[in-house]
Image (cartoon, rainbow, N blue to C red; front, side, top):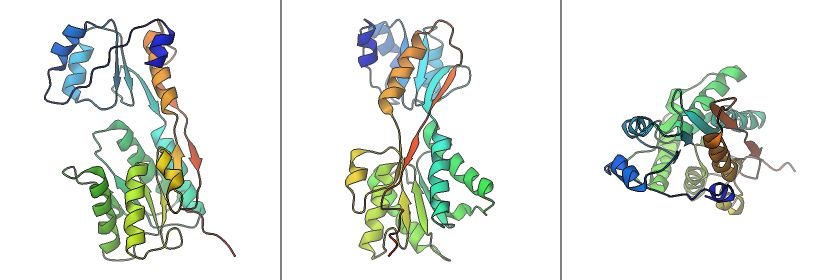
Length: 246
């Protein structure tokens, strides 16, 4: 919205669920251009593309369309390399719906990191949150599942976002498992609560304002140099992954 106003564009914000007639809403709004922020169903996206209006996807991807995304896979790789550098080898992943492009890319980066480090990937340590639960409860259940699984328990957890990581952290502490001594935990997004957790949460920091601004820029470009833009992310290492040495 800020980026639009700075350019003299009047933004109209439409939020719509999967059961709503988005195309009918679009006719009422009569937009000159469309920026889609976040996940929409493929059928809805196909209808929007068929409207023949300038279109950009923000935190979403589809072939042949303009899109701006965080470098999610690279962020996952940063998180995993950090954990490997702390001598963590049994790293679990708590993920969400792979229908979301960003989550799927983070899962891909998680798996690829094992290959790049020459380590074996154990698919039993990759747990997807139950879609029927709210995110906090789903992440907590996923953490319990990882802790109760047979065999050696994970020595680290990479969660697809900070909210899931914080839920996992609470489960570990409630069960008397020390973080980071017994299990290191890292998230993604650097939400404000991450720095204030006990212990403070390591995470991958993102610039969501830049994501929105770059989306508007790409939407307005007549002939963009690239259709798919990836914005950099960076690691913030805090106490949830760093064991204090005496």
